[in-house]
Amino acid sequence: MLWYKMWWESWIRFAISAVALLWMCGAVVLLQQQVRAHADEPLSYAHYIWSAVYKANVLDMYILLVIVLGLGGVLQERAQGTVGFTLSLPVSRWQLTYARATMGFVQVAILALLPALLIPLLSPFFGESFPFVRALQFSVLWAACGMVIFALTFFFSVVLPGAYSPAIASVAGLIVCSVLAKLPPFQGHSAFDLLETIHGAQLSTVHGETSLAAFAVPLPWLSLGLYTLVALCLVGAAGSITAQRDFS
Amino acid sequence: MTHELVIETHGLSRRYGTVEAVCDLSLTVERHCITGFLGRNGAGKSTTIKMLLGMIRPTAGVGRVLGYDITDPAQSLEIRRRIAYVGEDKGLYGYMTVADLIRFTRSFYPDWQSQIEARLLREYQLPLGRKVKALSKGMRTKLALLLALARRPELLILDEPSEGLDPVSTEELLQTLQEVRAAGTSVFFSSHQLSEVERIADRVLMIDHGQLVMNTLLGDLLNNYRNINMEFAAQGPVPALDLAGVERTRIRGRQAWVLASSNIEGIVAHARSLDAIVQVTPVNLRDVFLDIVREAP
Image 1 (cartoon, each protein chain N blue to C red):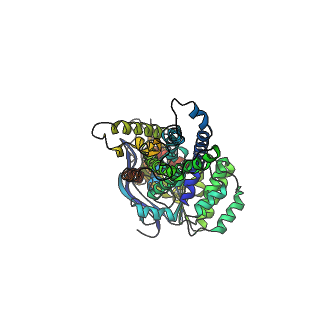
Image 2 (cartoon, helix red, strand yellow; image 1 turned 135 degrees about the horizontal axis):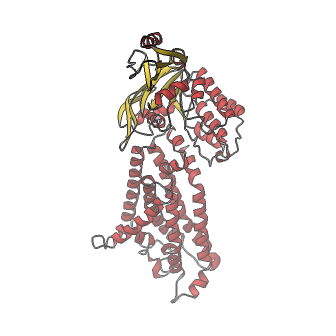
Image 3 (cartoon, rainbow over the protein chains, first blue to last red; image 1 turned 180 degrees about the vertical axis):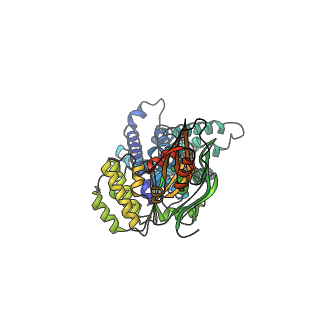
């Protein structure tokens, strides 16, 4: 039943996030003709979708929504006055941590999947096509990178009091990571640049429509594996801090 | 650990920086009793309770609840399986309905008593479909009690249970606690409402500045404790009153007030031998509490 609590605490944020993402993706597909007509140079549909959804506007919103999903937790419950009730339940703090993290990861993955479900489905209505397998590749990128972003906010929610400070710290943390990834020791190792990886720039979608029917270049599985590991470590650290913390 | 004790601490301490919230606290709470845990605001009551529940780790000392070590995470889990806790703010999940919260809480306790749940729902007239955040504080207290009692705990711990309640709700709460004790559950509740403690407690623990200053049966206290007022006729300093049974002494001018727990006749005889006019009066819990926690002038 911990799942029930975790779902209750996050479903409104999740539902709003899902609606916002679907609305944004729908708008991108709906407005494709107007935007492409006013582009400086000819823009293929695949490139347009990548630019608008997977590289910029919708992606930025996805990152912000994932950060919002990461907020909450036992420390935040203290402000709501429910921490006493939660901690008096016969469950360990590790169980509380894992239940919330798992619920968050599932929600992040579902959000990542939404563009892959909507865009291929909607495109034929506007005389275009976008293959599901390609969209699914981007969803995998979003899900893995989203897990790290979620876990970062999750971690800060355990460390920092206040409703908004974990979100601000997460945004700052992502910017710092992005800057660090461009420094000489890390340059050339795309795995270190999460914001670059999540764009999926290496996928051949940007080069036109020749390979749209199949998977493009293989996904950066090593980087994605590393991100998953980092996300799990952040959740583990959050669990350890929660288990040690006093709740006066 | 004897089976007659539900709570036992030895040298329990909790320090926050330079502040000693609880200091070397050694106390015992007996089974099948209502034990009132008295103290001023900030005396260390809530900190003690939170240490017993595993929410705060002690900086020193040991504590056991139902025989389980409060500092061991696995044993703390067992404690929480077998006791019930109602916090001061009755903080429950406001986004759930009453029915949702009951269903949620029930899932953690295999021994949940549906007939108790049904009876209390009827008695308290809790609206099942209403969101918890829309309940009054009195109704939230009743819901918190229902959640606590339907699991039939061995020990019920309450932190300032009547805080914010109107007199009718307070009265119902006190009656419930007496019924709970009669049904075999031990009750340990903190309060600074002396009249409530005096009404229902079997035993009184008093804490001040994080230290236990009294542990006595309420009946013994009311029967045996006395206020002894002395007025000395002779000029000069009031003589020392360091006698058996003297708990507290306050001296102002040629007058002395003594709170005595025993040896009343001996103290009176000693005072009279010093030419003092002596008046002995019975005490109530309020007198004793004020005498004990008030700084000597």
